[in-house]
Length: 124
Image 1 (cartoon, rainbow, N blue to C red):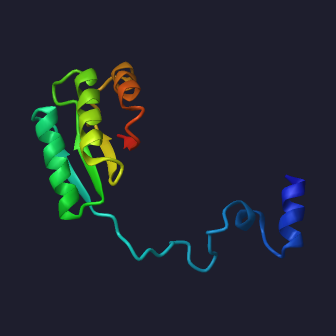
Image 2 (cartoon, helix red, strand yellow):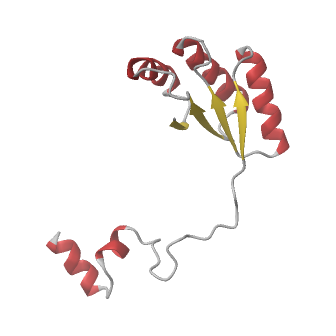
């Protein structure tokens, strides 16, 4: 810690600026020219149908999709659904998942194991 403080002092800065250079003391909120628009997608249909709807949302211009899962299906089926969606839309879009607190920890872990290669932004 002392070494990091010394480095910061030698640069006329503070430790926060060294560790996180994008932090600006005058403006704590970073400004962005792009706002990501997230579509909400229910997963009550078949995996193929949900994947087709997701692809249509990508064509419309959405940059993120939040999928509602845990709708009475097994987490394994939800995991396969997410795999199908990711395969259909590729990596051109952010995918988020919301189980609405319907999974136990064990069920969430089952899902996460299947979805680990789907590059999800988060599981809610």
